[in-house]
Image (cartoon, rainbow, N blue to C red):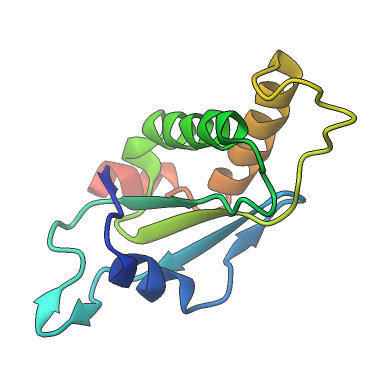
Amino acid sequence: MQRLRSRQQFQAVMAGAPVAKTPHFALHRAALSSAHEGRALFPVADAWLGVLLPKRWARRAVTRNAIRRQIYEAARQRTDALPHAALVVRLRSEFSRQQFLSATSEPLKRAVRAELDQLLSRVLLPQEARDAV
């Protein structure tokens, strides 16, 4: 699994509508054939993942970092099942600070992981396609 790094990569993936949504996350997807200034944006045929966590929805850095780690770990566990495409997971609403008092609490981690599992399961390759790859 590769990570999105450049602004052009993020813009190429975010140009389209989300392919999946949960109450707090949206998942954007783009084909790897995109190019910028005559150069391939995604030079390796692999799953590419980017994370977009606006300060508007997660004010504290510790919260953003905890959510980011959860996203990358959830995707890492499913690396073989992810399609060869560019994906961006975007936080689209705030986790309630009244419900989750601590930024690194176990209930918050479980809630984030449950939503990520639901989100990523919508784009996973079926078993037959994984065997063919």
